[in-house]
Length: 364
Ligand code: PMP
Image 1 (cartoon, rainbow, N blue to C red):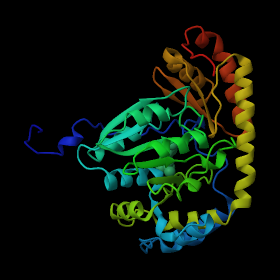
Image 2: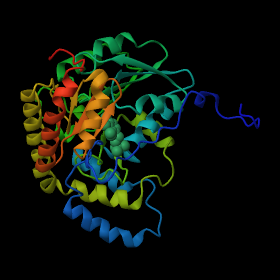
Image 3: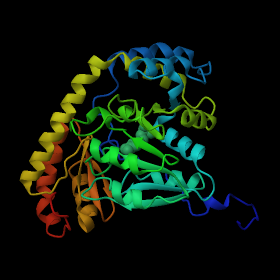
């Protein structure tokens, strides 16, 4: 209770508002896993046409976009839900599946917003440490109990980079009770090149408790428009739709997502360039002496422990913004070739000072 006697929801008392700070815009932006290439040209044109209609509310059920995604992916439209980014959908899933006192198991370190969303839904976060920088599915399974409603699998894992393989994930799903939902966060799906990693959609037929989460924010370059999609069994989609905030997927977001589906050719080249650069940056960092896990996303991770802050500060002086996870590590988004060259030069320059007090984990 506050001084005024005003009462707020008890489950929020442990929650602190978590606004993500945007870096100084004059720096090279390698902190938020956005694409460096701007929106796709044909998507910009679709947006320019749509902007004249923003006096009208969007189609709240996003019928056209749902059908287009369903046709594109080869699933029924009743199995597709839309939300304000995959974050909006993550929140909807938590509200749809959890009661007060439910538990949600998730990997840690992973996407830092997970615990926040779990608490806001009134559920209890159950973090499970990573194993060699990837989700430890065996340990996650051991953390499941009768209160568990959802297990989040982040594949590939943000911020560390590696993913879990098809065989591992299938074996996990076979052992997990079907009453527990698995939220498979595939925010970086378009960047995955490891042939061993599964396309989550192929798991849906045998496992109605799986929900696959994807986004137009990353590879498609629509981070500011806030639109993502979920593909799951009908009972999950129906529950998730009940938690939809009216009009939360804007007219511009719907138009841009629709145009994105038809822009696969434009998308392809830039995604390939990012994958090539990811490999080049990793190799160059390895040859500078850093330990760098493999990455299936558009970022690389250095587990620098106590030296993380110093590394982030050092890169800032070189004009590069990266994401520092205090006392754990630093995540660097793959930018354009020129941006990555600056990143590599900066990493090389700060290396001496940083590596001496880095607590790097052994290489895989
Ligand atoms: N999931 C993961 C693993 C992410 O890294 C991100 C963005 N950093 C998101 C979800 C959220 O993305 P958006 O809400 O923009 O779709």
